[in-house]
Image 1 (spheres, rainbow, N blue to C red):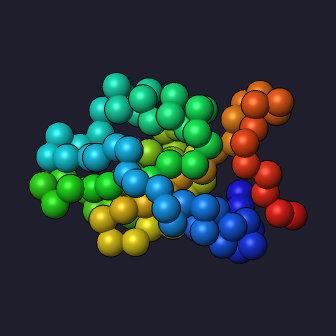
Image 2: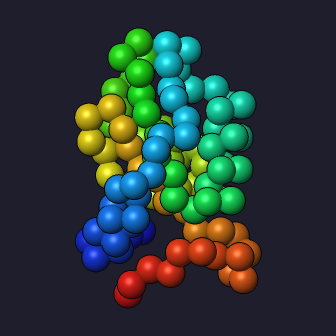
Length: 99
């Protein structure tokens, strides 16, 4: 669980990121969840976008994806949302959060 200072830090870091996944009219599936999990393991912080044709809102998609991949939702704005999950191997972590 992230506190407000950590969320602010991650929001600042994600400001320059481009969405690497889009969720469309098909909604979410196991393959997408697997790819999102792999991307989180490699990058730790990712931005996703929900298309207008998606049956889910950005908040619903963020909650669903975060539960399935074990990540924290950093922020949801409009059709985009940011997820964070630290790398499982401590020596490979790129992001150090404030306490």
